[in-house]
Figure 1 (cartoon, one colour):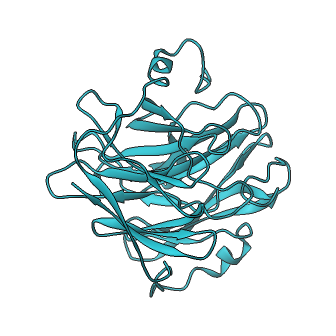
Figure 2 (cartoon, one colour):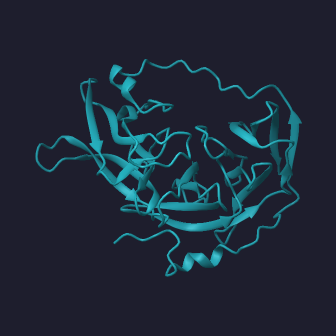
Length: 311
């Protein structure tokens, strides 16, 4: 049964009205700095087949069982330009590392009423089994977006690995409504990775924490008033993890309007809690790039600043 994210039957709606308050004397410090250029990475050349990926997307290289992954089969069948284009992916492609070191090509095609409304795949070993899972946004013509985890499983017949859906979060419940992944970390300190995403980041964004509980991604903590995307742009990285020794990960993320930064952690009750007073910026956020103890914030006016959480 498909369960919309904002179904009235869900008891999680009770936390949407929760008001965040500063939890400590921590501060967010801002220092003007050099431009937040993305460092050039030395990486193997992507397979030639990845040249057919959807426009403005990336082929992602992995270091475990998946060597490469990308989105293909661009299609205009879901006309929602949140990412700057009506073209979205209809297929997921991977190159799987074989026992002899060779690579095997696999692909998964979506049904005609769905697309991958994303521009970058996320390869992460969510369950600690040494194999990567693929985290991606999938959108339905009637139900809007859902966060989905794909991975490799042995096929029933040939006993060869096939791409399969491992877990799915609730659909938003309305067409043309999107969500943007924010971060992956062990936010609650239980030793397992969690997923954070902002639902409807352009119209009253809701920061949602998901537990990976196959076959579901279970929403467990919600907080309104956040955004990690500028409507109509391809850039999706507008949030960053800040890790301090002995502390749970903090999420540095803009509020609605993208001109205020907040630093959030899960508290003992499992709810998002501000760790410092919000920080007002001179211009909206364009991109946030993490570094040790903080993040570099590139703004739409071209200025950059280094932001650190002092706690």
